[in-house]
Length: 185
View (cartoon, rainbow, N blue to C red):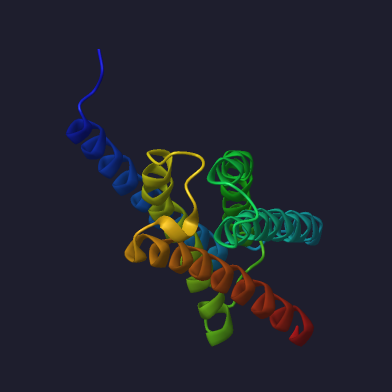
């Protein structure tokens, strides 16, 4: 039996709401643990390796996805191409977010440093944008795979560009601030 569209939208909204709550709770847990834990040096270096690997994987997934989105917008790839890439990198991006939050808890973040606060906000925005993008990918899934980006309504094109821009701004903000914090330590 086919689930009516309204019911699918309701379930999707509930999954997104659960996703938002999971991101908030995970961020809170990471910050709470990070402000109380004092791991030994060996664990600190292992956590730093996981943190850097998570940045590489997450940023790489975001860049690849947005690159294919740009190719679709320029008419050099199809929506089906973008969908294939999205299915391939979504899991990696979420693994990277989880890795950042778990390893970050072991890196003793200096929450009194405004740069650290901005970095944590950037990671939170990236994760929340990831949850929000599930709605966008759901809408894209309803379109024919050959539809040209230029044929989409303007508000839909803006939504795609906005989501990609938020993703890139968040990832690059976290990377640059992470570099600045490391070089000043």
